[in-house]
Amino acid sequence: MAAIEKYMPRCRIFLLDGEKFRTNLFVLFFDLPLKRETATKTALLTEVLKRNNWQETTTQAEEFYGALWDVSVVKKGDRQLLLFSLEILKSVDTEEAVAFLKKMVLQPLEKGDFSEKEVMRQKKILKRKLKSLQDDKKAYARKRVSEETAEGTAYAVSGDGYAEDLEEITAKGLFLFYRNLVEQAEVKLFFCGDKEEKSKILGLRQEFPGKVLWKEKEEQEQSKNGPRFLQESAKMEQARLLMGFSADVENGHRRAALRLMNQLLGGSPDSLLFRKIREEQGLCYDVKSYLEPMSPYLFVQAGIDAEDAKETGKLVLKAIEQLKKEGVSEEKLEQAKENILRDYDGMADTPWAMVDFFAEQVLQGKELTTEKFLRSIERTDEEDIIRAANHLELKVVYLLSGKEEEHGEE
Image (cartoon, rainbow, N blue to C red; front, top):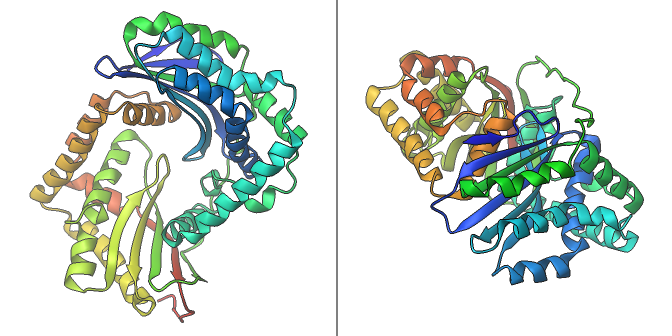
């Protein structure tokens, strides 16, 4: 990966080698600190901006031989990204594509305001979307355990926004928010395409002059209290048990060790949790562990019968203790490495996967190459896995079930 204009105060441009692809991919995003007071406004902006010039933008995209464009919001750790994307055939002149992208971002400001009627309409649509997220019980449970595990930090804030915060948002306030964001927030552009197109892209930096004035998040300290046990009820037959752990991600090597430990613990059909809880005990319908992008947390989720929650939770902790005390065989460790290496080898075949990977590195101030990341995976040994397991600290046990059950803390 090559970074262009690395030291630009506000707008930074990154070039990824996309010579072998049929399309050029542009991903421009405003990098915002994730805060409750701005999260819903940012999420609502995606709906309003998409509709602001929908017909005109869609027509022009069709003229570009079916170009794909979108405005979306993405949560990455404690960051919220307002993202504009354009994927376009290489036969389309890059200067035209850049003009199209610029129009997506800046033209809404030329009108001087947002339509009150349209903002009201999009508020209703977003409210329905947020309600539909609650209807997906598996996704809802993951969201809730993430919020509770990271309580008191920016990681706990929802990147999708909050229905209860929509009422106070006005068209005028939303327009001013967007204008300030465009004029003051940090901008990053990733271009995956032909290197010789570089000079045609640099002009975008002139649209975002000045320094970053967008106020950074305030540092928050998470509570040091012991694990909390929470239960919620919903109309569902299968209960969802989730456990949230804080982890050690102090540096790149420890992140690599955590990624491998997650693979061994519950990241594959041959993982420790799957074998111990599903195959040997038959206590769950599904079980896995997972990591969230750019967060210092590990989660375990299982589909169970509610009455098996306590026993399942004990077996999860027992599996982690086994990793701490017994480590892992060389064969299992090598297999886990191969699985991760295979996933990242395939990343180079997808423009979006490349952008996602390198954007995460940039957001963390790393800007690593793929090769460096993969070498950190290859260098990880059994002692690193044991160390990663020992740094896990249980923060939350969360149960979502169709009926109330009594569960003690033991």
